Image (tube, rainbow, N blue to C red):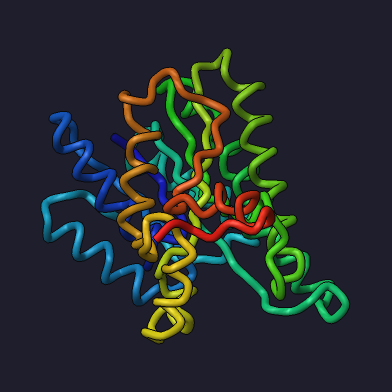
Length: 261
């Protein structure tokens, strides 16, 4: 397996790198991982941890909002691995500001990192993915389906990502390339640590989740690894919620029902 994983320095990206490597190992395949993030020091630590576990992991730090860096990633994968069969577009940013206060730079950066980079990176890797009959998995969000105050254009950027991946699945299916999304719900990552490190707030959130717990990066990573694997060989164009059942609670709540105890 030759994989690119963005946002790999922490959270879902870091967990996905390990999940992919272990999945390849169980299948008797070598795991070559190109890890991408802007946090160079943390990324190096993740790469070293994977290398210590016996996997070939290379860190490459840079800004995914820069199209030139995206081209560098594709060239690096070709040079180091000879190609790519797995692309995990996981990196994302979130800005806390209502639409009336959000700046143009903040809006543009969210779309650049949350949406545009998946297209640019998939496009740059398309020849390699076509040759390998590979898989793309992007990390969207349940926010793609519902507004998420006070995060301005975050929901819009993730909704656009879901449709982009569906479009790629339709256009690139004849090339043998599978394209899918996962949409995490309430997951405790570095991005959400301010909320979930508070026991009271974590407990309050958990009681609204049918499975009664906040998710972990590993919960999402295992689904990403599945969608990237041969076990999902006939699945494409799917947006799969990994949310403990949160999305299905909206209509019962509106009708006055509470989440069952």
